[in-house]
Image 1 (cartoon, one colour):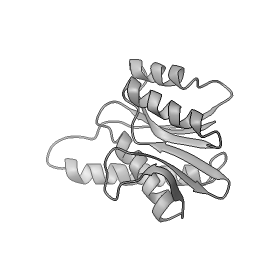
Image 2 (cartoon, rainbow, N blue to C red):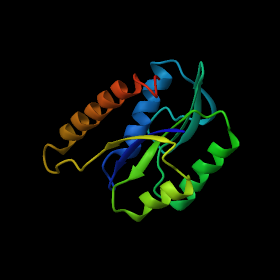
Image 3 (cartoon, rainbow, N blue to C red):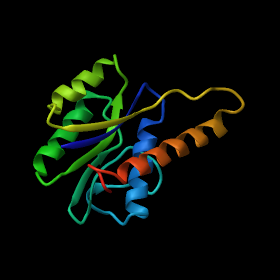
Image 4 (cartoon, helix red, strand yellow):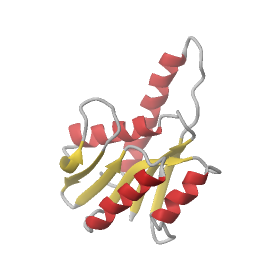
Length: 151
């Protein structure tokens, strides 16, 4: 399985980054939602999108054991899934190891992760968040253009 993850602590933009790349794939690259749902405005979601030979399971967050198990259930009941895009906690957070254990991620799986950090607070926070998330999306688009993703 190929995993494309956004990792980081709470409130670092992980789920919003998952939403942004899903929005790009659906509304710019022409992927179609096969199951689940993709909201018109950002909110928590999961969906399976398809185009050509790519079947991508996207879930906006996996910060709880329940949401990780939900992701696993959907993955295991859709054997044609080729890629998973989701969020993952930062190194040292106990949910990170639970994520890998519950999903049974092994060395045979390809895992690419973009690590996210906190954005400065204060008067410039709004502008900094826009800059930050736009930059993360540009990086994600570039990565997904290449093997093993080729979205």
